[in-house]
Image 1 (tube, protein in one colour):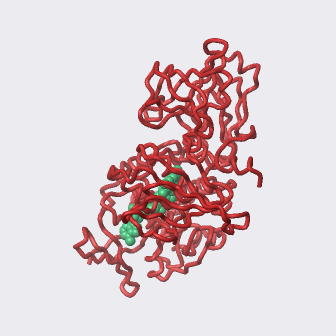
Image 2 (image 1 turned 30 degrees about the vertical axis):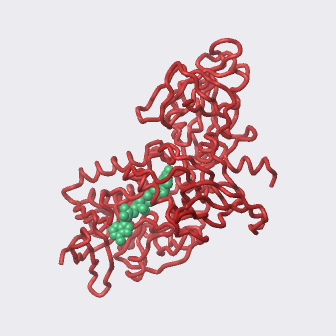
Image 3 (image 1 turned 90 degrees about the horizontal axis):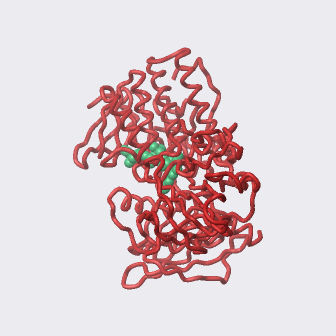
Length: 371
Length: 169
Ligand SMILES: Cc1cc2nc3c(=O)[nH]c(=O)nc-3n(C[C@H](O)[C@H](O)[C@H](O)COP(=O)(O)OP(=O)(O)OC[C@H]3O[C@@H](n4cnc5c(N)ncnc54)[C@H](O)[C@@H]3O)c2cc1C
């Protein structure tokens, strides 16, 4: 049995920030990630990020990962990193987290406090032949292309014009792949307008109010797709169009990865705005299980910028729970972080997040409360 | 919803609006090195254009969700924002450049191959149609981060349409 003060599950922007923050206040941290390398989504993001300069806006995702790795390196005396290590289960009876390292070693780890920063899973769409070779999720395409340098196909039809669909289309074009079009059910792109403008001016059609009906399969692989116009009420019309492509990429949303939180008995609520079941949390990102915190997409699908700040908030709050920081020192740093997070969510784009958070947060900042 | 609204909703600018305004014509005609043209009509939480502007021409944001507002008197056409903007929504248009029927556009570029100085490129409008040929004057990489700024000489009557270039194979 191993022990650790703080276990951080997931080494994306949320988990990395949480680990660095907790360590900076003197906590001993174990950071585990199921992937071979840390970084989560960041290592696939070759585009420049939006947001505020404090959250590295204007910097490419891969570069932000490097900045966080440097911070982690500086904190290495206090942080044990286990990559290729999956947290498979939590056992409430003895408070043990079961880890599998390198797909062979089984480790029992008992943390005092745990931060769940496991990110998200992709949603997929049901349609005929969606199991044919050549149909991918956007995450898989990005991993192939940007992590392993593998060309996913010659001509891709993208399903979904959210930020992921738009950005992955752009990245595919950078890699020399042709985009046959982007299909979107809604009457407007869901992602930022500028991301759409960026691919439009390179000649990519965006089919608003359209959906995919089926993949066309020849010789066992994708050879095209049919897309269909829908009317104002979202009902299918007679207008069907055939698209030539050898790859279909689905970018139709993410779902928070929350299994460990369920196992820990955290109170979970279904919040459509946050894209799935998410834990109830207080203003310190602590769940209803007092030993479990949450940060990043696992707490609701948002952005890396918010994930990093949430990671920091959970990190410093755990440090407080462990008695490593208190009083004014805590308040000052905490309030600065909270302000940054509020700023990110302040505008129109943040409205959906704000309304979602109302359904799962108990936002009263109770300074007296010790976790 | 009209066709025009749908076109805008797919990422094509259909009319000038806050965040996507044009410089005052008179100043524009005489400003050496050009003035910034930003096409960022949606309020999103993003501010690098303003925070990277060396002269404060892109006014500092009160709220990070503000769309960019520009003090054109202060703009020196340096194209720093062109390189910095994660949405590739900043351009510089220099109407003082070259012959009477020419103008210079400074565009962000992140594709391969990179255009070569002195060569001819296809100039694309907002839906990717090749509307003119342009001559590449300079290619710079202001932030050393692989986002190039391509300075391309274009027909003056096309400066309102041309928003991208494509290397001719
Ligand atoms: C195409 C695309 C473009 C984006 N562009 C932007 C942008 O411009 N600006 C922006 O702010 N955000 C952007 N985002 C969003 C951003 O990437 C995510 O919001 C962010 O990565 C969430 O961080 P996270 O740490 O919560 O999760 P992730 O980055 O997903 O990291 C989660 C980590 O947890 C690990 N993990 C999961 N389960 C376990 C387990 N049981 N045991 C151990 N490890 C586990 C995973 O391997 C992963 O490494 C983009 C996302 C995509 C897909």
